[in-house]
Image (cartoon, rainbow, N blue to C red; front, side, top):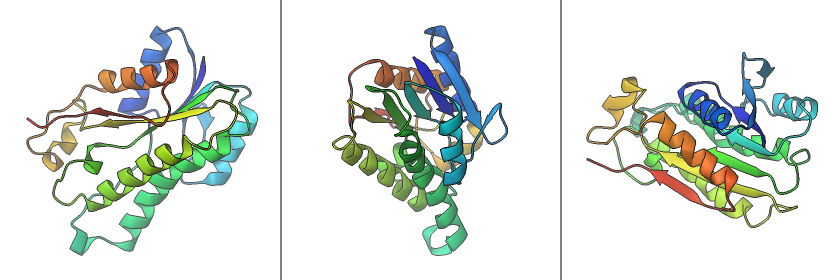
Length: 200
């Protein structure tokens, strides 16, 4: 497969490594990488997919959510979170649709906050719910044998800066999450949410 991986952070890097090990071709995309795109800018996503040629899968491992107590949350926190992790991933699918190969797949990322309650994470829970609902609904409408799925991890082992937001939760290695992406891309799943989390 030729896989477009959007995001070059901890998760995106682990995913690219897992794909290389499985002998897939990887096109790495970020705001500042060799292939540039910004998930908050639909025009840049349109430009990305028109120029990179044929591909078989798109995997989103990017998108920010800004935590904060609900009563203190700002319009900017809500807007930027929805635009980045929410509409950013949805727009990546929409922009890629005309160009992805028949039978190709999309894999998005949500997170534990759609299922478990933590403090000051209403924005994250809302955005994750948006992504998962999109995946379930889009799976019923995609043409040409295309598939779409979602990976829902908890906090990553490699991201201790976020541990305070997830007290009592068991971190998951980025590689485990990457392998879940690979499983969804390589097998005939459609409309599935793969959850990689448990509480301690």
